[in-house]
Structures are given as C-alpha cells and as structure tokens.
Amino acid sequence: MVIVSLATLAATELPTLRGAIASNPTIQAQAQPTVASPSTNPFEQELLRLTNAERARAGLPPLRLAAKLSQAAQRHAEDMVRNRFFSHTGSDGSTLVDRARAVGYNYSMVGENIAAGGATPAATMRQWMNSPGHRQNILNRRFTEIGFGYVSAPSDRYRHYWVQVFGTPRQ
Image (cartoon, rainbow, N blue to C red; front, side, top):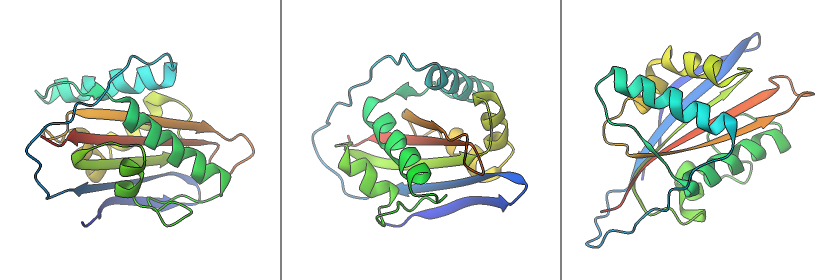
C-alpha cells in the first residue's frame, strides 16, 4: 500500500494543512458493515454538516459519520498534541492505514486531512477547501464515510488540531 501526500502547506505564521489518501487493493467477497452512530460532539456535527454542504454543491452524495473513523481521527489528533508534532505519520511510526486497521475499520479506501491553527470548524473547512489536495479528499466521490478528531491545545503553537478521516468500507 502507498500513501500519497496530496497537499502540504506549512509555514510558521500560517495555519498548517496536509492531506493523504491510500487504497487497499485486496478484494474480499463479503461486505463488513460499518457502524455509524450519531455524534453528540458539536465540532463533529458542524464539520459533518460543512463537509456534506461542500459535497452537495459539487453534486455528490453526503458522507455518513462512522464511529470507527472518528476513533482513528481522534486518536491521531491526540497523538499529535501529546507528542508535539504535525504529520500523517504517528509518533509511533503508524500510518493512516495502520490507524484504520487498529480500530477495526475494514476498508477498500481511506484518506486523511489534517489541519492545525484554525479556531473553528468553518475556518478549518475553508482552509481545506482552499487547498487542492484537501479539496480532492472532501470531494472524492469514492468515499462514503467520514470521521473527525479535534483537540484544543491552548498552550501549543497552533492551539487547534483537526483530523478528517475518509473511508469506503470493503465490499
């Protein structure tokens, strides 16, 4: 499996963004359902609304919130804050693929957007939509599910860390 970096914008004074996508070429005959659950997290609900609004403007179907993808996203956001780094690669060397597998997400394709610095879901979504690689993940018609992670770190340089994990369950 290969992870391709789709976008990188890193500057000391500007919010930071990165995007990645990976696919799993293995085909499995039987579908594994992904449990989606409503979220009570207001940031997650707002990011889902904003993401699906962008997809609707592009004539694409909405993404479903997937608890396992949110779990992978939240763990990565927490890892970045706890270990003071900003990357698609975890502090333990894990990749998006590793994180999706660790939470039991059986995928045919996964993608990830990360951002740091945006204080609100709307500001972060604007950053992602103004970045070609991030926009590509958000508007990828092959993705059907999404999860979000967010950590507020007031004493950190960026203060806000955001993760979107996109997925398509294996059919």
